Image 1: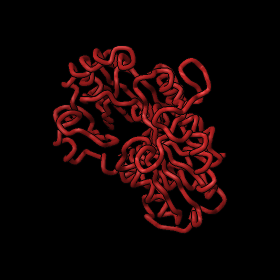
Image 2 (image 1 turned 90 degrees about the vertical axis):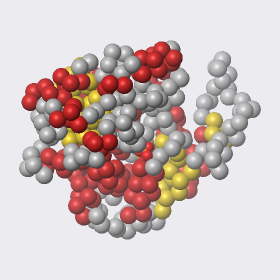
Image 3 (image 1 turned 60 degrees about the vertical axis):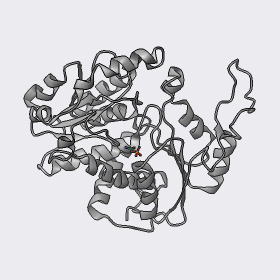
Length: 353
Ligand code: CP
């Protein structure tokens, strides 16, 4: 059964087909009945504007029906752990009324796929590194599960972003391969998960771009993800480097062609969250400005949204001609149509209508 937790677990040809298919959906903007009589359940354990709207519409565009549920808000609160703190079988004597095993087991009998959003805890490192909750949901599900952002990955964002970049370079009659991609840490008043930067890094590596991750000391991405990105980029003709000098990264090798900004939490968030907050506040000068963008090679600006104006990036960049954040958001719809077609087996057998 096809699940999409991370593109790393998915055969490369599925990624390639979904990417091409997302570009076709963008071009055709066609509704179909390809998934008529299918139902999509959407479980949002965290807030969303783009993912919720685009996923509901992706189902609608394919002729399917979607149902959105927010656990704890009009739906029972869910327990997902099987054991208590001392390894004993779980006793559900607190707020949660329903275990994820029953909840997902039931939903699997109603719907043909589940989309799930479960953010990182930012309090339990092992749990976050294991992406524990989404894997529990996958284990309990009898239907395909699509990750709508988990502790470590945001594969729908990743595919939409890849399509955005492909389209940008195709307008210049070229490919992203060999182009310069800067993924830059950005200031933020809150510690944010790393799902999007992890996914953006792998996405650019997969496109064969020369990727530079710019971030302050104490904000390195996880070593296993950097290793995977190195290997992926090498296979695709690109490379991955890290720096603590954002301005040098933007201007290096003739200048960045794509600048992807995202706030993410520092290493200390699990063990010393107060220190992490102090360190994060010390780097407010990492904000992207028009002057910084001017050092690039006519580079485009990308952000997954939501974005804090004046904190992550100046409004002048967001409102300027190089911004692609709204196109990224649009491509979420096209990308998720492609993903639903894949998980429902509507692809590859002449059913790409
Ligand atoms: N980029 C993204 O996933 O947006 P939402 O959190 O609004 O869904």
